Image (cartoon, rainbow, N blue to C red; front, side):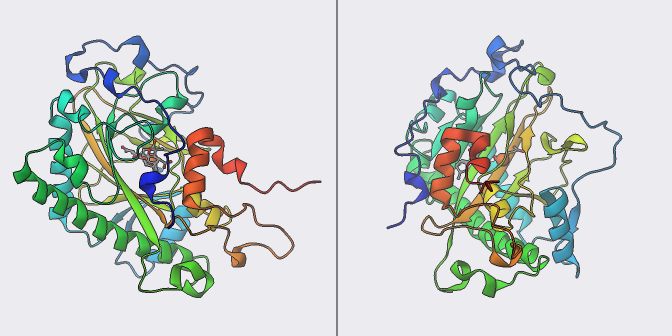
Length: 359
Ligand SMILES: C=C1C[C@]23C[C@H]1CC[C@H]2[C@@]12CCC[C@@](C)(C(=O)O1)[C@H]2[C@@H]3C(=O)O
Ligand SMILES: O=C(O)CCC(=O)C(=O)O
Ligand SMILES: [Fe+2]
């Protein structure tokens, strides 16, 4: 049996101080432990992009005949894009947003009943990457993989459960279909077709992918300029599809522009390339560094669909994308191995599986 996502962190405990979460709503001043300076994050104020700058990740119409090339180009230059006409019913986006709002609105004592354990994968808590920073993030999260029933039972009375589980299940199915479509469209733009990736096509009756849902809440913050919602990171996924409510906060990093805010476009979804897709594309697609900022007037919610391969699949650069006279940029790695490397080495994880050519 391949490792399921639920078991990924079993031998890799990290202690996350869930129970020290402050009651965000009662604070009128930012506590010291939540105040970020460039010492806590060297890229904190990196060349902030002036608000007037028009450069932003593209908004791509999935029905456009040239969508594949537009997506491919966005994956190379930004590692991120937004999509309209994605086919996911608006009602379902509203449903998952409602569920997310209801969950985080629960009293903190109730949410803590479903706290993620030190070696666990699912449940309520601070972001996993918190252990790599000296300062706390102004957010709370809830991770789901597979059926959310066991965790949801700890939060809500019986009569809510079926409806909430149905929403999650339907959302995962829709995202799954969309993610796979986006992967093939972007690969097409590189001249890579289904025959080139054996593990994805060998058994059409079997789903070769697995996923997690990360619900995020960024409460209203008394001093947003000095706080951090979710610190800069790349996702360990092939692709991540993000739904954000109508409140800005997500920023993507470009070496030449600094931090660029991704404006919420109602009904559209944000897609970003993760580390595994960067590896698969032999470095052609950019695994984008991103973070979430907070604000003083509106609470922000986001739902990230984190998508990757089943744990027995080894991801390595597609041979077609490797020059005949060079070695592939990365050695092969499964999602489980990669998540564990990331859990110990965080932003160094990619460079740890890079093939270093001896001179
Ligand atoms: C399947 C995944 C991907 C995880 C770990 C695990 C479950 C939760 C995901 C996130 C979600 C929030 C940012 C991140 C950086 C984090 O702290 O938890 C992500 C991480 C990753 O992409 O590495
Ligand atoms: O809330 C956001 O906009 C970003 C969330 C995110 O990056 C994540 O959950 O991995
Ligand atoms: Fe992310």
